[in-house]
Image (cartoon, rainbow, N blue to C red):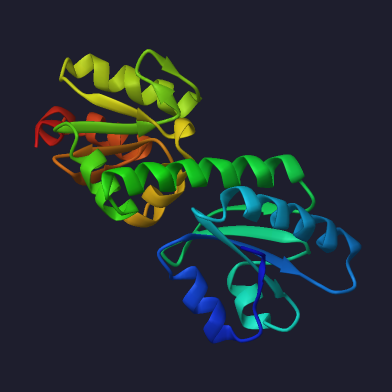
Length: 216
């Protein structure tokens, strides 16, 4: 399927809210780099068109949409799942556009094979264990300072817990921010409910409420 050109705001809304993950190019006719990115999307659509849909819109013709997504320069590519922006690439970064498209196509295949929507998948993940931590890396190898601090604090409680490496799954990494309405990581869940991030955990530790909270 070729890259679809958007001529009306209603078309854009229909595309991004559809079942397929959407790769949207915000472009301008005068910018030569946009044509280069569109050519790449045409090639990707041949490879991944059964799992993703690719659209292109003139950023200047849709100022409200461009403003909403903070389009400051063209080309910008935004990836949408069920109407929510889950990732983006600003500028001509062909490798990043290709890599992110392929990862999202893999996620779409995984979701299709299990019959799960992203929301269903996230709900299952946050309920995977009574105490669940979403972080960069895992309990044995945290990959950022905040995650390392959090694991050290939770380990001191001796409570059992599971971790999920958000760097291993871009769709979960971006989708969980919307699902939980919490923009940063790590995130701690108890019995499927968000407790918060490192600052909240530190506050609970200082007030001696941490262990009781993590036990639920």
